[in-house]
Image (tube, rainbow, N blue to C red; front, side, top):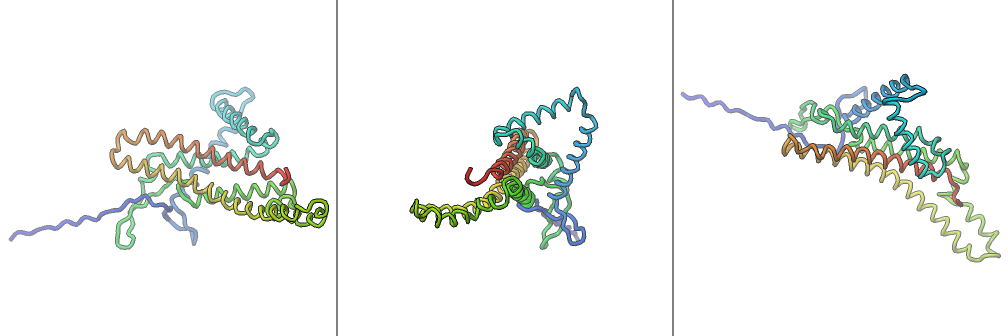
Length: 277
């Protein structure tokens, strides 16, 4: 009598999900792999910041020279956008924090083990691989939060800089409606022009929403697409083939961090100018 053994193989799916996967919960708070990566980025920033702070010297050398060169280059770029050294110095800490956080998150997603070390769980009768870490900016929740913080901050700066009334008139321009009775005798065209100016304010409200959408989706789309590209190249041939794409993604990570930061800076700078200017 011949006994036949039947071996069963369980296929484990490892799809690059468009959303971050849950790793564990703290009470009702869900901790995702993208959030874990963001926490690592914050810890690295704190460690690097404290390390550099203790090594600051009157005569710079080594890493201090490198960091000062970066700061000077960014300040020069800031000046070209704000047109004012005073504004550049004022906005630099806030915008630079965006730049460093996004840059480290972008580059962390390229490290070996990020996206490949994880656990296998059962979902709806299928074995699914869930990585412990995922690039923070490859999660739309992260980029959306960054965009909201940047845009809301621009409005707060606008209120502080030019006052709540002038800032509000950029969006709900009641001033032009009140001017109609005063100017209509001298210039009847205000009956046509001022209502148009009033309606333009609502277009500005839509543009503020568009800022949040464009900022978040641009960063998310570029970083997520890069991770999918590298994963695809690694699946085809793991040795050598992904290297050019890794270098490309390093540059993309830097450029996207810079673009996001410069857009936030431009929003902050525009918010400090009154509507009539």
